[in-house]
Length: 468
Image (cartoon, rainbow, N blue to C red; front, side):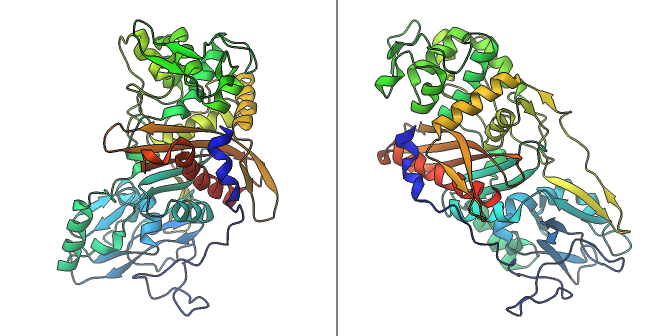
C-alpha cells in the first residue's frame, strides 16, 4: 500500500476558497459581486418570488429561471456553474423533461397556477468539497463521493466528464443540437457515475471481507496472523493468487490491507463462504434495489444463489460478479468510520416553502443501523490508518487529519485500460468522520497499479482537505 500512495504526498492539502458561482442565465434581482457579475442568491425566498423554485448549495441558489413566451412552459430553467452541479441538480428542459433533483422534487420546483413554485430545495452539498472533487477529477472519466459518516449527508457528489444542463434547457434549435451532442458523446457525460454506474470495486472490497472475518470470529483481531500461503491456489482450479509482497505470507489483516495481499483475501473469502459474505454485503447496502438519496441509485451486487468456492474466493478481491457504485463503497467506509453504524445517505437538507416555513425531507432507507460491532470498526479504522499512513489531509487552518483508506485496481482485460479506486475516511474540522470514495476510469493499464491508484488517492486527498 505504501508504494501505491507515496506519490500522493506531493499533493497540496490546502485548497483555495470556493470562488463565487459563475453566472449563466440568471434572474435579474441578484446582487453583483466584485467583478460586477450577478452573485448567488440567498436561501430565503421572498413571498413575491415568481418562476421556478431553486436548488441551493451552501445556502446559495445554483439555479434560476427566466420568463418565456410559452404559456404552457412560462419559465425556462437557468443554471450557475451547471457542469459543476449537474450530478446534483440534474436537468430541467422545455423539450426533454427533467432528471435528478429537478425530477424528484418537481412538485416543489415547478411553477403552479399562481405563477410561482411552492418552494426551494436546499441540498447537503458542501460547495468547497464539490469544487475540490470536480477540479481534481478534471476531464477524467470517473466519480467522487463524500459523506458525513455521522449524519449521512452527502458533501460532494461528482461525475466526470460533466455537462451543462443550461445548454438544452430551452426549446430552440441550439438546445436540440446541444442535447444530441450530449447524448451521442461516447464518454457519456450525462451518466451520473457516482450513483448510476456499477463496476468491480477491486481491493476496496477487502474492507468488507475483513469486517466479515472479524465479525464471524475467523480472526480475533486485525493483528492475528492469518493462515495464508504466499501463493494460494483457488479451490478446484489451477489458478494461483500470489501476494505482491513477501509480507503477504500469513499476513494479519492489518498488513494484508496495507500490501493489498490477494492471497490473503481470496483465501479469507473462500474460508468464510459466500453466504456469510453476502449477509455482510447486504447489511451494508448491496443487493438493494430500493436505495434512494432521494434520486434512485443503481443496485450494487454481491452474487446471489449458488457460486463455487473458487468464485467465492474471487469475490474477496472485489472481482468475479461483485459490482458497486462509488456511493456504495463510500457507505461501506462511512460505516467503519462511524463505529460500525450505517446512516441513511441523504442529498437534501430541507425544503423551504413559499411562506418561509421549512420541511424536513422524508428519511429514506430506514433508521441508523449497527451493521458491524464497534470493536470490529475500531480495529478496521486502525488497520486502514496503517494502510494509508502516507496520506494526510491538511485543512485550510494548516492542521492535519490522519487518514485511513484502501486502494483498488481493476484491469479491464480489453483495450488495455484499468480502473483505480480509493476509499478513505478522515476526521473533519468538527471532529465528525468524513468518508470519501473516488473511482477513476479509463486509465492505461501500462501505467501500473501504483501509478494508477495515485491518481485516485490525490483526488480523495484534495476532497478531504477541503472539509478537514
